[in-house]
Image (cartoon, rainbow, N blue to C red; front, side, top):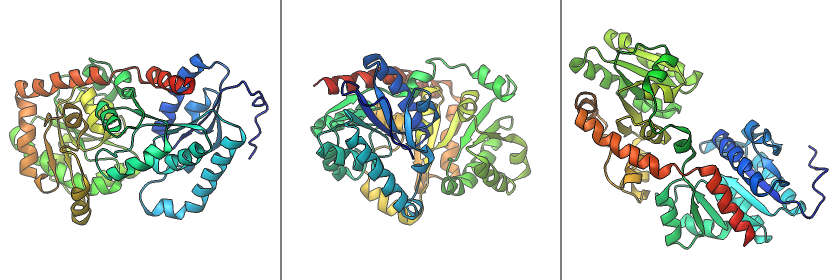
Length: 392
């Protein structure tokens, strides 16, 4: 691979290395590069990124998908390659005498690079905080030794870093910039080809195989129970990919006939599915933040294997798991987790959000306030914080 950049010779150029570990990081990176160019018109950017970052003139030394590994086994299988990529990125940054390294998410990979470069006198920034505030809080010492600036998407994250004397800037969440404050459900219904006067519940058991295996059947049993109370309600389930679609079809095939008749499986389009629906039943995760920004009342659920739950429940250091509740610092949305995640509990908790307008409005009004809190023009604020770091 050719790492020689012909126009990198000038000592006066601003040189910034960026490593994005997955598709969401490519989106953040592209927006950040756009805004950094306003501060440094002649800046050069390189590292690892996707098509969006490349469209901004970014030079990627490795394909983005080489870093997109999950779980415990796959990273171990790919360890030699990952170590080679990290070594190459570190050495190239040193050779190019970069002014700044920015790691976007992927903390296990990026913080290791940041620590090595910081020891070389190169300033470092990490964009998107790991969940150190929630569990394994001892990691804060390693983060403090690795970064000169942490950029957080959520305000309570910034507070945590301030308490531990780590330089930090809260920049807001890009999703809050992208999603309108008053989204239109009728447009979503039109895009999905749905009937305007039909009421829907979005059912979202997760995007990973294990999540769907643990929650898919449970959520469809909840659908069956809700039909006893709301026989005209219809249900929309988005599938994250073809593998999840096949998995959901197999689970749906085992349900009563009336469930099959009222459930539509949708290929992707999860935001439109939520927006078209009256409420959402979902697996805890980023989807809860999207539902909040779309102003959709929700019930959050999750189940782990018993052994994993026994371990994780002892490590968690916060009162809530869903982002709406963490942001509000109160039980704004119901969380029915592990042994509380039963058909009876879930259906009983969902019914008021489908029948009681006051119950719905209590969530929706709070969601609007939280949306304003997160709508900060994240790309602009992140670039400004980085510019300030570089000017110090």
